[in-house]
Length: 322
Ligand SMILES: Cc1cc2nc3c(=O)[nH]c(=O)nc-3n(C[C@H](O)[C@H](O)[C@H](O)COP(=O)(O)O)c2cc1C
Image (cartoon, rainbow, N blue to C red):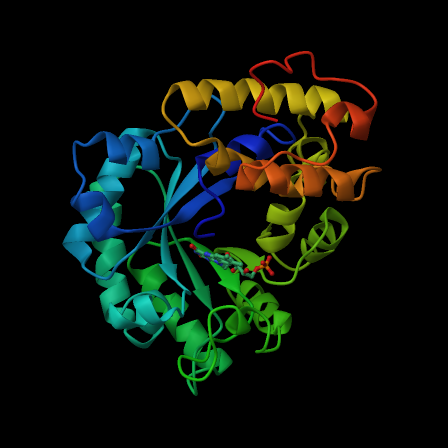
């Protein structure tokens, strides 16, 4: 999710789940190709020791450029390359990629072929069930078939169509109704493909219920607003041990260590702090926490210290960015 799932946010999610597959924001090919060999690219794409598994999502429509970017991402250590065929933003429409590409399956197929030939890791596609008046099940199934023939095996389907005119990106994530049945049908008719459903799924219980119909679930907004929801994802879905649960103070000590390390590397504190608003959702004190962290993001003194909110200090108050 652009401006959301950057490496700092993904690091926070790793406090709660080591196994959940995470995605980068959509990275447009021009951004990568214009910054080849620069530290900017290391900041954007670099992975730390806790990062994987993580998929790099690319935005673009030029097969050769996408192939080169896929190769660069593979070298950075990503586990998967995902092509964005779902974004309806005006900027993306202007570049004729994102969801517009659903109207040009040949171009998408060429891109998948070029990317698949360039890397050893899987190339996957994130798309919608359709756009504008091209929104029948058959339209989506034909699109998927074209991608499959080009080598894609995994499809992450946002279960709503997009309107290119008349709705802004936020409305395109809420106004068109969710049509889960069509994603279930896609899986049912293509049991050999991996079909991951996306859109409106807000809890691990809801995610588990979806697994009766599809192979996996992608969670967007709910994950961002409450990363702790993944606290038992590893045991529940991956047959692996969950990370040790943490108290608020243990979590904050970890955030503070990470923040201190990042600031030493030249990162602005707010770049990390902004992702902390969703910590502790639903826990006692979460409203005061949000007020505290909002003040810190703005660089003003919070009304209440952490000690006042949580009754104890994180032990690194001097020099702490929290
Ligand atoms: C702020 C924001 C940015 C997003 N950026 C991306 C993106 O870069 N790539 C992408 O595939 N989807 C992006 N999305 C869409 C989500 O991945 C997801 O498809 C959509 O929000 C529906 O899922 P949800 O109901 O679980 O949030 C974005 C969503 C939001 C709210």
